[in-house]
Length: 428
Image (cartoon, rainbow, N blue to C red):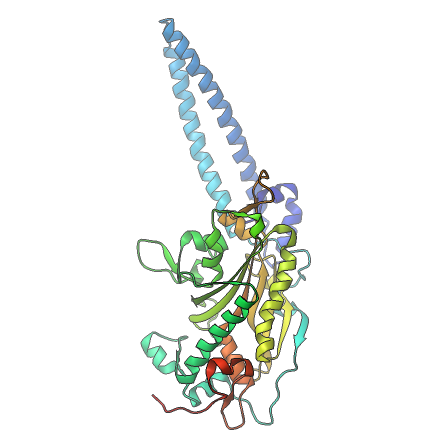
């Protein structure tokens, strides 16, 4: 959530920067008008309460003197009614202001390139050259079905489209990748966490999924107002909601595994086959709770730590800085890691590494103190894919496919898999 003080201090500058996201945020001028009215009402209420207190004291004096206090009592009642009316108006204004701030995205960092969409993202580095073959490479879903690793037909029977059943060594590869990623990151100093897969409305609001993107979430039908977790970012950052963290503990580094669930509401017709865009997928997420003065140093570290998975697996990828028009709503800056997919002859996103600055911490009231006597201040929250497991599965299968249709296992994964190649298994 934006700090309204920044908007008061430089409204046109804030609006201009937000507009680089590709929408018109001029409605914030109206918000400032409501904010001024809110502060005026607060001052008026304080003055009325002062008068009421003075009148109440006078009533006491009149009663002690056994004098008539009817007129003063009527004045107090009138003041009370006026205060109640203003309090109700104040409550409405505060709700309107809060809702507007909740649906307003984060202010892009000054280093973020200005652009309208993903075509204007900026490549910053690349690892390995794209994989080439002396045969026509197949898509992961063809390989998965030919080798009896994936079953989309039965998954659709069980649930519906955009679900999958992993089978045999396909299931083992998924499981191996989760263990491999968690092992690598924990050895790099991240605390392993497996949080709940169900989160409440407060958690979804704190990280920015609600209220604006509720249609993208799977909501449970019960009295608890619960949602299926859309990403490990949500439950993991909310571990610290409404807490003041000891400054000496920063940065807090967490490696969180969850199954994630997304409705993919805006993806009709896109990636309808395979594992690129499913409703349910495994994900290993990196989370940092950092101090404001060095959060961008931590962002660069997180990027390197996330890249390490693909370097160890020896899969070609590149890193791009997202432009303002492609930036997620909660984020001030994001790097995307894009892996090479031979079947599509292009790079596709496999992970995002982002700094939300204090945007999520302000919504979730996550703070720290620079010293024992210092005033609490909001921390910065960072999150990064470490990685999306299903898309890593895709990248391995496509980049390590062999001419005979088998899949070579990356050397780093052989201890987890127990085999060097995936070949055709009996169909079940």
